[in-house]
Amino acid sequence: MIEEKIESLGIILPEPPIPAGSYVPVIKTGNLLFVSGQIPMKDGKVVCTGKVSDSNLEMAQKSAKICAINILAQLKRELGDLERIVKIVKLSGFVNSVQEFSQQPKVINSASDLFFEIFGEKGKHSRVAVGVASLPLNSMTEIDAIIEIK
Image (cartoon, rainbow, N blue to C red; front, side, top):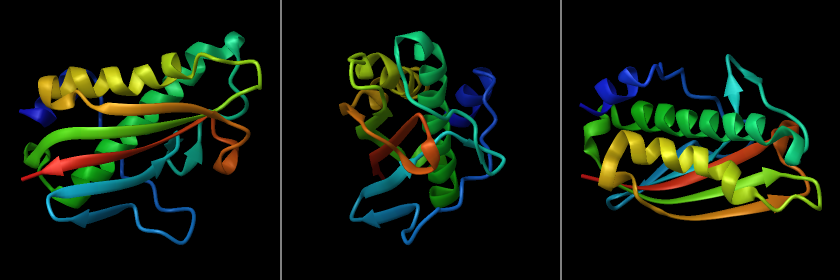
């Protein structure tokens, strides 16, 4: 049902991105999965780069949505079956923004909204959205997640 919902939104889950550093993409402890920060990668390339400002807010929102899709891809690889997801517990969103930009929540909303749309009540989560001076590979956004599973 979850994967059917994802497909109905026109989303095809990609192969999950390979870590760019000395870490693993997902750690399981108890009934929680901790998904490492995902950046807007497609086919091995960062597709949304640079500083976020009021002038490129829509591109930054696209960037955050790609991060969310990559989180889903990591979960699919780890779980095999997305029906095992009980709750999206928390997202932490980082926005590579110019100093005067203050709409980080609007950027990360596109990821949050996607999880709400796919998972309904199970997709409602706590969240942080912060601006940062830079991100790996000059990506616009990076998002990590904590997921409860059965």
